[in-house]
Length: 324
Image 1 (spheres, one colour):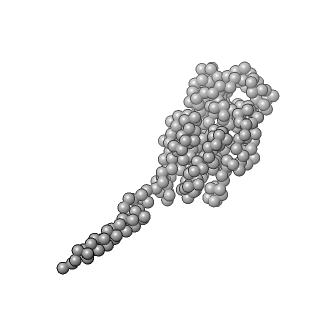
Image 2 (cartoon, helix red, strand yellow):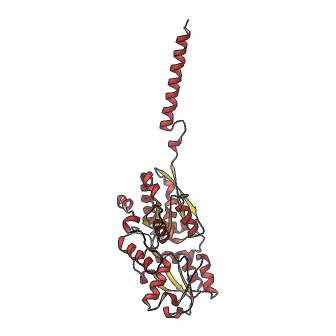
Image 3 (spheres, one colour):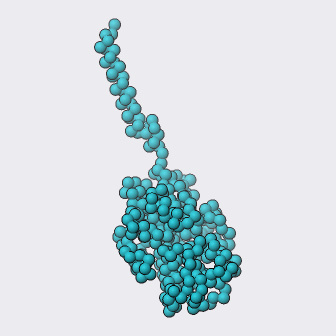
């Protein structure tokens, strides 16, 4: 018969084996299944045409991404989106680059890793406005004073020999702008698409200038990621950005697929979407130094920023360079 000492030794050995098995299973993810779960990357957006590459990337996820799952988080305003990004409730966003620059200036670790689009902003005016001087003393709507749209208004007036104070720039929710123009409450506006195209399609407004006629290669929306996300999960961030660029290339086709995908994320009539897509570009989404520095220069000139982040501090093109 086994002695009590032998039985105790066997029990101890059994416990050691069981503990080792549990540790092994946990390490490889077999018991908890945690390793089998992909990282959910949360990206904020507003339902605008400037975020179409993001919509397309999300639709392409059916093909399966290796390291992550994409969750798009819809917001109703830029301040709400910026707050979610700055406090870490989302990992990144397609957003007004100027708001991200302001957050960076205030100490939030953010990086712009790609553009949201190129061109595609229009300065829309009432039918009776034929030249910039006709806007003298009138209301002109912008989505946010800290936006490229506001800078485009400033530049348009400057190039026409007028002062910014010659018009009454008022912050207005983008969705309200076409109605405000139609009702005569404003004489014009500049904002992200598709809101410019809405007034033009209704016949209540006309394009006075395209953004590239005012400022070639203007910088508006960008894909911005939290520095913490990049530093801790670079492989995930790299795969996400790579597929975002694929989404941009696919969006640039502006075909039926792109339009069908877009309407899942924003409510827009087909005619309006078609017109909006004519004005905007999604290829070559690299944020270059010269247009960025011009943007920073105007932020200072207009008194919107005292010390905007430098190009080196804020822009990270390494993901785009690696994807080539």
